[in-house]
Length: 100
Image 1 (cartoon, one colour):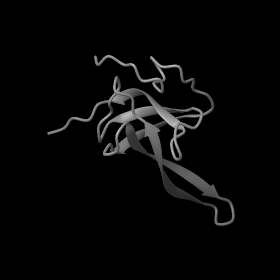
Image 2 (cartoon, rainbow, N blue to C red):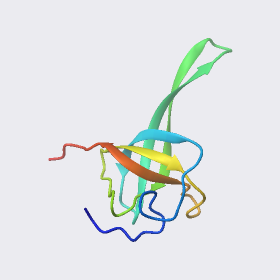
Image 3 (cartoon, one colour):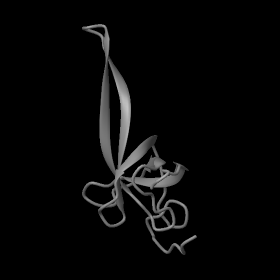
């Protein structure tokens, strides 16, 4: 385990989670302390009596103690605004990606 002194860590820091929690897949971890989490969901359209498959890409804070990589299935929780685009934080890794 990496020593965590990140104030924006949901486990070791002072930031609190609230609101919604999602499960998604990390599709990018190129930015420093940020991961892009992709979430697939269905939306029912009453007019056409059909379901749409949609996806959303959510930027989330990636603390050093968790350090999620591309391909990991993670749980993210809503927090206050951390930066211009980030208002979610990764709380746990559900399933690690089996990389090469």
